[in-house]
Image 1 (cartoon, rainbow, N blue to C red):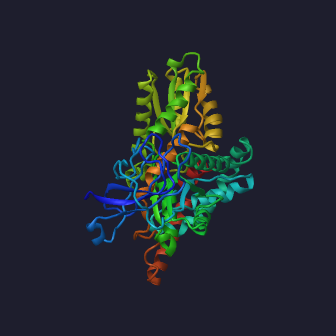
Image 2 (tube, one colour; image 1 turned 180 degrees about the vertical axis):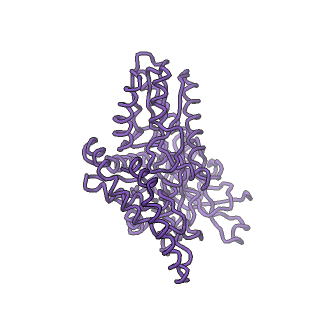
Image 3 (cartoon, rainbow, N blue to C red; image 1 turned 90 degrees about the vertical axis):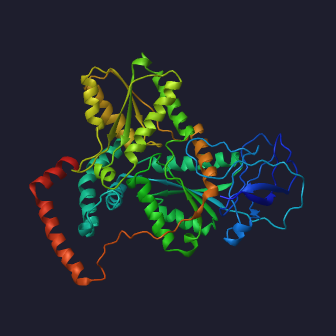
Length: 488
């Protein structure tokens, strides 16, 4: 990248302890050949901070030749970048040290949006079966071979009908519905406040994958609000095809079909498990819960993560397992730095269906630990940042009961991060760091639709033989037993 000279305006800002105190001053900084430069005021004790971003024009002759006259940087009030964990922008650090100069005639105001993506959950018992249908109708949840993709919805109907009674019992046990939407709304509000405290005014939207408010609804509201730059923040620390990947696929489909959205600058934070703020927030919760045990040093720290089918990792290249293991390593390193050297282990929960899932399984490991003489165990739901059925019912009820039955005497569980202040502030930092790298999201991708629709004969042959084979498989004794053991 070429370092060139840029000039522009920081509109309505005031820096404490620096030389910039008056309004509308010209800024000269080195810049890089990217598209936008956005100043985002950081948090300080100043009396005033801007809530609007200003664009700064780059005078690079090379950039003008390439048709890219803007650059991207993010500054804090002292002209420093304080990036922890994963870095989302390649822009450098810049400080102001120049005289007062005349400001341009106008400043382009941005409307920044942040889209929080989450799974969603049924809010009443009547919502359970349609929620399950939406879940299992997702081709990123049940990955059928191309020949059998026409069976996706019928299979989702079958599974949701068979599984609904047991799932209703689980939701009834935690109050009759999932608290996920309320928690995510609280996180959205807390994030908005945290960003404002750091000088960024942005609208925060919530988009759920399988229940209301659906991602499609959030995107339409973003369009109606005239958002000019969007940061997409999935509330999954680690990336998986079945979580972040599925939600991004929906966004790509929506954006591809809309002229306005296809040109909207978007920055997607695919994962954030490495961020220092997240790691420290998790370590804080673990350290606090350990102190509730009679002998904190004797407690086994038991990380329980949501599982995925092995085929996602080995065949589709899902990085989830590697990211999860690295996340656990970072958390334990932080605890060791604090003098906490407890033993720990990782297992995977929530498997569904007859396929092989990531091992070891949480239920099996709990039994093994009891047999080995472990007496104190602290469960840590590491892949969840909100309380929902898999923490409140699966861990707190099913796994706790299993652990106590297996010989574990002292049980504890770390709460989900929720609206933990240090966690939310770190998410705000992640958004601010991601803003400068926003670019148009659309890029040609391969369609997930069946190939061969343009050849009716070929498609009918596929349908016929696929249906026959599917009928045989579904009625086979082995498949019936698998559904009885794993679905119902």
